[in-house]
Amino acid sequence: MKKIDITKQKYESPREKDLMKHIVETSWRYKLWMGFLLVVILIGMWAYYRQVRYGLIVTAMRDFTSWGIYISNFVFFVAVSLVGSLFSCILKLNKNYWSKPLVRVSEVIAVSAIICAAVIIIIDMGRPDRFFNVIRYMRIQSPIIWDVIIISTYLILSILLLYISVLPDIALCRDRLTEVSGWKKKLYRFLAINWIDHPLQKAKLEKMSKILAVVVLPIAFAIHTVTSWLFATTWRPGWDSTNLGPYFVSGAFMAGAAVIIVAMYIVQKQLKLQKYITDSHFDKMGKLLVLLSLVYLYFNINEYLGPAFKMVGLEGEHIVELFVGHYAPMYWLVQIGGLVLPIVLLLFKWFRKPLPILIISICVILGAWFKRFLIVIPTLQHPYLPIQDVDESYLTYHPTFEEWAITFASFASFLFLITILMKIFPVLPVKQEEIAPESNVESNLLQNENL
Image 1 (tube, rainbow, N blue to C red):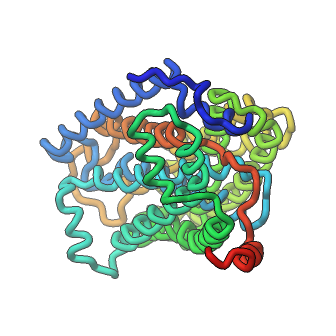
Image 2 (tube, helix red, strand yellow):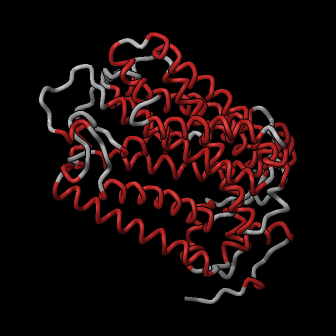
Image 3 (cartoon, rainbow, N blue to C red):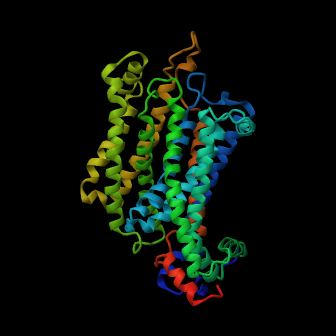
């Protein structure tokens, strides 16, 4: 492998050097991290090979619990992907300028998460070769096709948002990083599409960015709402509720904000970007996480208050199972450790410092995943029309080695995609100036009629 001399790069400012040096520098930690992720992914691929060869019997999924942790992973990844719209659209349209350094990180996470969400759905199928039948024999009255359409649309829009954001910096990489490997030079030249930082180009890019920011917002809300409809249109206790749409959306924003905080910490420490991701960013993200968690707490109370007050039939059995039954330890740990306690702690400024908020955010993320587990598994084990005299394995669900291996591989793939994207492109926007508004372009065109 060619040894790159970072002193030969054509950096024109300290900011360019700070934000682009990680592209040409490769530490042993990076190699070790990527090697670890690849090992986990390979183990998951072997487990998936076994699943395809022998069928879903190698999993613990049966006629009662027909979804399992694969769908828990799917809902979690869809939730995390919503963070791209939170930063790229909501905060941007509200002119929260403090969030600018975090926009690209959120877009990278969103693209990686939605790709993993799409793949995990195919993994959940016993016959992945029949996936195309969903498209070929499209039945618009099926909520499944709604999900396919909305996920595909959101994936395309997320990629476009990321590409538009990083395009000027791709051109900088093309011009500045003269000593990188040949394939990177070709990649930068191809993706830069003749970008020369002209005001007309910048104005068009700004216009596209605004249009996408507006368009992607309803799509982002729709993706989690449609996912909730998959649950709500299935006849199971706990899912027959109009609360599921906003409940899923609010939980997604909370989980996504926690993932951003963890990413901020890693980027700040590993790439030594303390000048650009400051304690102030962590403080503001902590306040935002409190707000999002309070909204989610409201929907959690709303979800259980009605059924718990009535305690009728299978709805009552489901509530008992969660509150004092088999899943009670997990349920209360999620509610207290992953929701209530983080809210209380983050009200104090000391806990919004980088290290404390990192630990709190990890707890929120773990709570978010286990919450998706609780949404899926206990409900499926209480069907309105149970099968008589079923095998004991139908009544319980304990994920098998294959399921856990594929689950860990899906998370490793998620981290692998994020790491690759952050290694190839600048993690934060290199250019500080705003993209020129259209009004400036008109004056420039008047000055130069040859454009």
